[in-house]
Length: 367
Ligand SMILES: [Mn+2]
Image (tube, rainbow, N blue to C red):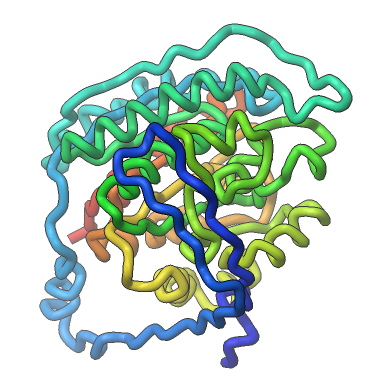
């Protein structure tokens, strides 16, 4: 197989990563040389385990992380057109997410309910997106909660709610690592690119834009949350599972140089290989990973409870395997679980699945 098979190999054009502003504790102006960097997947697989005992040891090799989590519930629907998504946190509570996390040995240090305004907003022509002021307000609250959870040594798990909440969670993660002068990687599971900008979006729905916002593109009220942008570098960001991409998004993905692994790549290479390549693409100079998991990355036959289903997605096991493999790296510091829409679900099946995914991301193994 050649490198050209992967979107993981990219020629990146580096832009100035922007001035930071007064809110920051450690203020640095990052100015990088313009030029091109070629990212080449460089996975060197460790010797394959030959016995089941070795395999088991191999799986448990990751360092032990935080033993406590903070659950942050965000019943946000303002980023999309489907109100049922605001019931996602309630469905996760019905699925007993907190007790199940404690059952695998983690302490739930805090459960936070983020307040979401009840407004219904309409897209006005020439506006930069629906409900931007309201989403900016929620995003700031989410960012503060996530940053606080990280600062207290817990793993923040943000439960939505539509994917626009990631604008806040990633801002919080980014602010945390920035103060420590450390880098982090972003792995974004989704059927869609979520990388529209106000210029390319027909609907004005902000849940189609949070990846772009995190990369520094979009409405300044969202992009400049916490006083700096971008929140994450394109070369440290990976999209996994995409299959429903708008034409302008295709262009943005190519231009920004984020790493993207489509469902075709997963069909072709297998999820395990794609995960290895995603990690190689991000590189080893990171202090942690943020996993933003849109439930619609999973096939709607398995996960029907989402607002914007798209066929041909991850299987039940692929979705678990991805998170199990990422958990083994010992690098997961924060997680979003988003776009669960109980109004579309069958007997809370998708919330149960989402709960299981959180356990896999926290390192639960079959053996
Ligand atoms: Mn999404």
